[in-house]
Image (cartoon, rainbow, N blue to C red; front, side):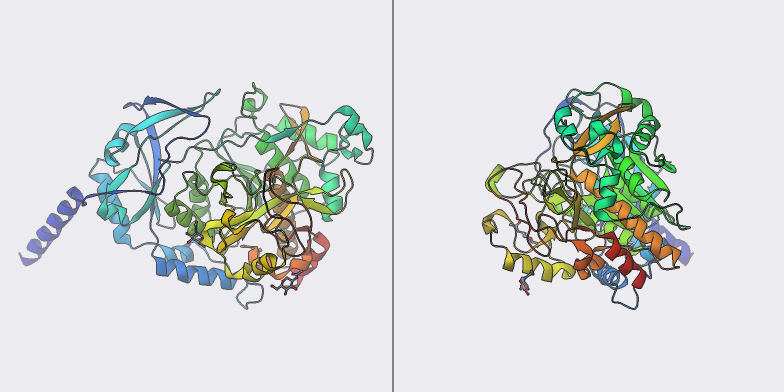
Length: 574
Ligand SMILES: *[C@@H]1O[C@H](CO)[C@@H](O)[C@H](O)[C@H]1NC(C)=O
Ligand SMILES: *[C@@H]1O[C@H](CO)[C@@H](O)[C@H](O)[C@H]1NC(C)=O
């Protein structure tokens, strides 16, 4: 009888919390703009529109701090714990929010009749698929369809702030993707006249008509990596694609045969590829160019290391994070050409939660590389406000940001200079991490042309960490449109190249029975000599100010570009 009474009281308590979660709290309050360039607001949502949402639970700050310390230990080549990567279970044990919080969010969802929920392995993310009209009630907001101009691409997003009851807001960091409108990268397509192309005859490995284009042979000559004939057991690499970036095998074949390399192949797709899209009409969006560039070049650098392509049509970084969080054998190097300005719809809650996820990936022995952006210091917002606009995720301390260079002398394989549009600068969100504090201080002390301090945050994490060719002087040769050729520029070219080089470095370690390299930055900052220092060029994107590359680390090219001979000797020795 007594037990029954206790049970009844407990049941009443649950019912009470389920129906009253407290007064409303605005989520991601630092986001005030519910529109984005090239996105037109359309009709309000109807009952037929379904959306997939993720409730990202808050991590406890003391656990995050402890986890960060652990990551910095196991990814420090000087530590006796170097390379002792964690399993998914160990990450979960160390970081998962209290089960009570998960329970509370499930109760909240259930109070709206939503009981079909998917919890990720880390037990910190809940995915649901619900009618958009129900989401309007759940978040006390208004939702619309937004259409990207001149395209058939629509997404559903809020057109005003969203909120949660305070009990839920206390345990939920943010709900994705309600706010963020995708930013489509319009690649810097470059056409070289035939006269220009033929002016240089030395780069004929992809055909004499394309002799001024950066190609696999040029990269190999400059960075010095070998052509692999086999891959170490367990080695793997990946590129991550969003935003209608599919690929077609015709282009991979044409690229490979034109450049005289083994045919670049994809070993595994996560998400559905639609190769027919790559040969369709071209509007403002350059179809498949981003993904073909990524795949062609990571493949050219590091095949036959198995290559996985992640593809997400939903435009959310969280899709990828969730998959990696659930996959015990996720590829060991992941190249992501994706970014936005910290200030553009990218709330602090979003950035801090993503940053925590990046830490978990690094701690599992997986290296994440992000392109640093293609607008120099100015970001997508340009010169607005007369301040630099740092990029996210490039400004996260727990990923490796890859910037861009050009050859000092056009069509001469040799020293590099900063590409003027290569993303770089200092975060307004994340402070300077310990591993780069000396490098950043030296840069500020030694630069003779620092922009006025009013442009950037003196206490912010500096990026990029490393760089590679990306510029328009000798743009990358690619195959696209089902067998045509063109050339493109961007840090999205540099990123897969550097990722491929680190995949090769992992190969050396795995062959020797050593661990993968995991979170790379401490290794990079401890080994400046293993990079080709870039000491000229300014990433001002042809505007009034930027950072100039100098000896040592700088906020235009990081440590510089990979020197494979030196890197391979180093990774074999630790
Ligand atoms: C500068 O960066 C720090 C983090 O390092 C941040 O707390 C601060 O708000 C930033 N200042 C501005 C003006 O953005
Ligand atoms: C830059 O400044 C630091 C002091 O912060 C100094 O130790 C270093 O030698 C200088 N030069 C270079 C090339 O880093």
